[in-house]
Amino acid sequence: MNKPVLRTMAMAFFTILFLIVFLLPACRCADPDPLQDICVANLKASISVNGFPCKPLPEVKSGDFFFHGLRKEGNTTNVFGSNITSGNVLDFPGLNTLGISMSRVDLAPGGLNPPHSHPRASETGVIVKGKVLLGIVTTANVFHSKVLKAGDMFVIPRGLVHFQLNVGKGKAFFLPAFNSQLPGIVVLPITLFASTPPIPDDVLAKAFQVDEKVISGIKSKFGS
Ligand SMILES: *[C@@H]1O[C@H](CO)[C@@H](O)[C@H](O)[C@H]1NC(C)=O
Ligand SMILES: *[C@@H]1O[C@H](CO)[C@@H](O)[C@H](O)[C@H]1NC(C)=O
Image 1 (tube, helix red, strand yellow):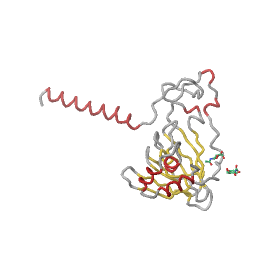
Image 2 (cartoon, rainbow, N blue to C red):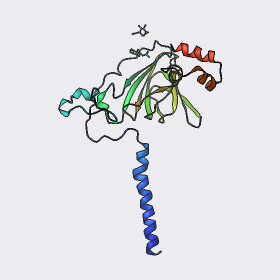
Image 3 (cartoon, helix red, strand yellow):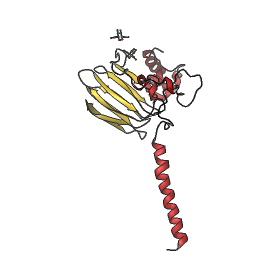
Image 4 (cartoon, rainbow, N blue to C red):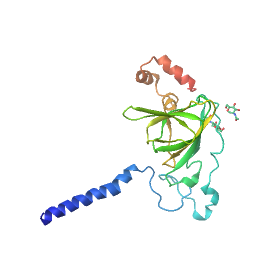
């Protein structure tokens, strides 16, 4: 092979290598990377950035790296029989800029963490107690589900709609983790039927192919 051909091939090879090494991983990450060791959130800062400004280093205490909020069972006496105790940057400022967070989900017997999605994070986690049916729907509208027991781990790709139902006899709880300090949550029934101000009944009636009375009936269950 002559030199120009070899040079072109070498350039193509390094271009592809560059794309694989640098650009593809960038597409997979959620929150941006930190630029320093520590940036404990100052939640009260008046300036607004993508995340929270750091509190001054001399003010950082050991306590900023620990959070006890997930010890306690959430109160599941509500319409869904479930409770999410969040451990995101708003509850645990030490997570700021690190692109990770956790929470705790308690499910009463028969309790449901209703269909929802997290716009800013993939989710993984482990069932700590009980028996939980976990369901995920892909954007191709394929439903994946499995009954999980204590010790079982799961993963929910970013943005996909999913739910967890307690199918055991007793209480259940699990600890999800997210690749975002603030994953966000869109709970479909709440988003659609309990927004402020409400989505017009005729929009939802058309979307669900039912009478408007059915829509106002559902809305009344959520107090709107
Ligand atoms: C979840 O549990 C906490 C702590 O018991 C309680 O304050 C909160 O109101 C509960 N949330 C719901 C939606 O029931
Ligand atoms: C749980 O919430 C319900 C409804 O708000 C309340 O009546 C009950 O006292 C709460 N239970 C505990 C243990 O706080």
